[in-house]
Length: 294
Image (cartoon, rainbow, N blue to C red):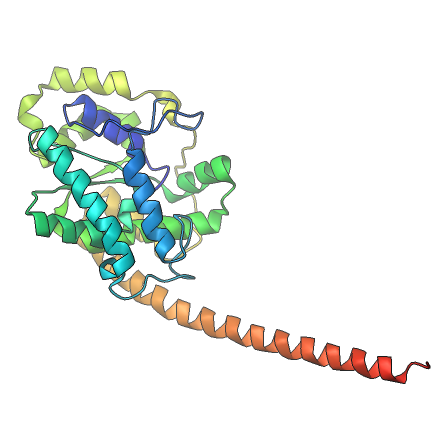
């Protein structure tokens, strides 16, 4: 999910020797150390969302992903572009390469199919953060409504655990980078099979050079969420219990589908009523016009 420490996590992986693409986004006031995100991959994934009338801020509660959307002709064109990037980067970097884009969480069906087709040994790191802090950060950056932010947090994390499953090698938490970054880095590196290349002193030094306290712009200890699935999901992710998170995600997914049907039905009803009211108002105006003296 956006604003969940994906940039800091990718920065660390790069510092630990995982190559990234060359076309990284430039730093901004919101990410002074950089985004560590490929411009081309981000562009392609935005384009995939646009084929379905979506942006990264669109909730699937209101605009659901079509059935088997990743196999549509429009998406296949972009999938082929992603496949070419993957082949090129793995060849250029002798088989080890990493990328980061929060949009990937919702577009994993494309990547999972690509990984299987190319027989790639892919592992995912899921970066999470307290949903209230994510909402505060998104409101500060783009004035996103906090309730929508929480819904998007749920959707990104639910879609990720449902699609990636056992390929999620590690779950890392934003606050843990500040509180016990070396331990979390050791866990992440071991989970990815990269731990043998780094001593404890090496890990502590690299984490200290990348992670700084000024990253903690918003930090929530105890705050009530607005949606019923949010805190159980966050609790499961904090415990790195992907199986439990997947169970919660499955129930949420069913609830999301049901809610979409109810909301769509209600909106259609309101539209019909609005149309009828406009027709009635127009008829009344026409009648008054006929009654006015010439």
